[in-house]
Image (cartoon, rainbow, N blue to C red):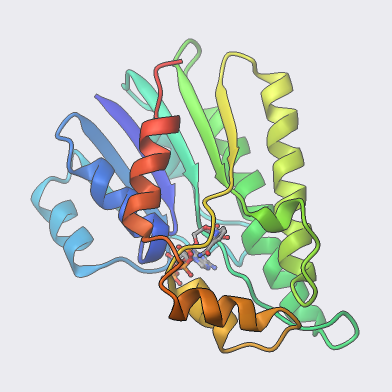
Length: 227
Ligand SMILES: NC(=O)c1ccc[n+]([C@@H]2O[C@H](COP(=O)([O-])OP(=O)(O)OC[C@H]3O[C@@H](n4cnc5c(N)ncnc54)[C@H](OP(=O)(O)O)[C@@H]3O)[C@@H](O)[C@H]2O)c1
């Protein structure tokens, strides 16, 4: 039995990863986030030893992660941590941003993945093979006007996980850019104002956004590994 702890599973890429990984009866899946789908709740009720859900809001700096980490790292052939929860807001030029929104963005996109990875590594029993996947963005390496907080948080996250990879060569650690996907996050961008917004509107209208389920399948085939 392998185990997977996935953050932000209520929709978008996280929901697709949860559904595809939970479909294998040899997988134990731990979903962590603010909300869950009816299907996820039904699965957890039907198979409580294999599927579990923990309500955690990553906009706090003390997310309650001890129980989900224990569930994901105990008695497993391989433990996988998938840090997917994220938010693109606030979108706007520097000079127009509210301090509380900047702090929220950093907490959800950067502080929470750091805290979760720290808790995961601490909980991992010695000798248990493990993977840590940080769902990042092209915005980590490319400045996008109007997305300063998101760009900065994803860049910070990538560096944190590069350090983890140096410290722990025994773990499989990856920063993953999933590319543009047709999820709620892209809807937020189409409703926001920033200089390159039209290209996001056009990509949606032309059907150029990837489906979350296709991206999830690619991530699983490329990164859910025995290495
Ligand atoms: N969509 C894209 O084009 C794109 C491109 C590059 C990278 N990404 C990255 O891919 C990942 C998934 O994005 P997506 O497009 O699937 O986004 P999405 O549809 O907006 O879903 C975001 C997920 O994160 C959860 N989340 C947000 N704030 C949270 C909080 N405070 N506490 C707990 N969970 C929270 C949401 O759950 P609730 O709101 O239900 O709590 C939801 O499940 C993100 O890390 C994103 O940065 C996306």
